[in-house]
Image 1: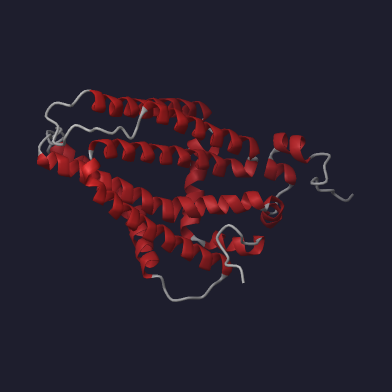
Image 2: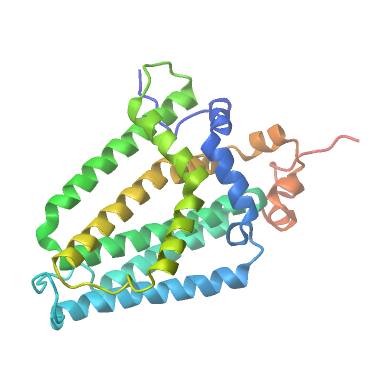
Length: 290
């Protein structure tokens, strides 16, 4: 028997995803955010241009670090540039290709997922560049990357298995890793604001603690931040982004089934512009009996 995976579920099985609490949270959250619901196109454009500029600066910074050593740096001068400017250009083209494809294929009720998909790809681009930049300057810390990869593999495989069980109603022993991460995410979503508040209070009381350090403690702090960012991204990817995008994928794969399930007309589901261009006058158009 061919092994089932998370991309091959039937419409009926895909409905099991609608019971996932994290997916429900993401749907409600993205509905309210103008960056995803399409109500702030100018703002999204300006943010995108600004972030692309930042990513370009990172590539320049990495190149400069090879050509000119930084004064008082706690690490040896790097010899291999893992983030050349040409790589930035390739990543930019890839992002635009995904953006163009998803924008042209999405309809009204899929726009929110498509917008999140593009933002998600932007986040991946940022993480890739950040890691390549760190790798350029901290090449001798390669063992850290191994730890991150191992941790990430464990988390992602655990969540993939959890989604397969949810989609196909597979009964099995409790996944301890998955349950533990669910609890952590729930606490992060519930008490994350408290951490931010404590940080603000700390900066108010000790305003002079933000100076950059170039000694060994500064080195350790940067490496620790690198690990924390990567692990945080892996957890968010596995428990928030992946399930949400998977649900969007099935809504795109079974549009008519989900439309009927939600009780919407084709114009309400696809939007008038998409309906007139792709549905009206074709065999996909729903015939209404008089």
